[in-house]
Image (tube, each protein chain N blue to C red):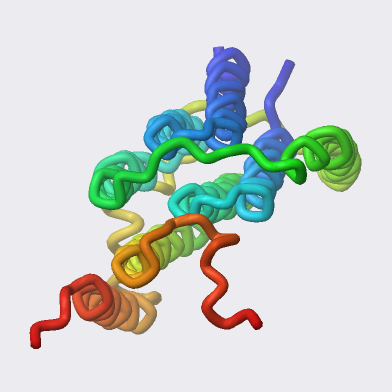
Length: 101
Length: 166
């Protein structure tokens, strides 16, 4: 059995769907943020698999940029979460209904 | 050998990913996410991305996960209670999700029919030297913008997370 680029893309799709499920179905905001990291990782697999497929290093450089954006997103997201917990006393997404009426 | 490594670590990644979503306690999810990151680093090595694999382990499994675990500790959030909607999502959502994944996998295999196999060591374009050369010549402007982004993220995180001093 030879493993081609398509197999990597299927793994990427699986992780993307699992991450989407986590974002949609979970209520704890920490787990939602972790699911977003999973989605960004799925994108990285795609970029690196196509970098290998076309024999070109550009995809890996974009993967580095994606990692950087993921770091920034995690830092700001967790900062927001701490501020939210300090004000509302909860980390469950369905109890954070400040803008609902 | 390559196929065995791929299947083993892809299976670990998917199982850990499912465990991330299924676990009720955040710290179990964080540990599963570390498993996903580590197995993905092996997949990047198989694809010839040596530098990315190292960066994945250092930045994701190291820095970001420490940040997550630290936040879980600070928030002291316990296990999440299941609601009625959770069971509904399990019985209707999961078969639909698996079917959707099957359809996408079929389309991908149809679009890339005769791709040659991924061999370890066949693509050597992902060394630190070549990535550094590209980053500091062709992609210098995005790289510098990224540094500004990181600076803004640091400032934003500090401003958001600090306590207001009266």
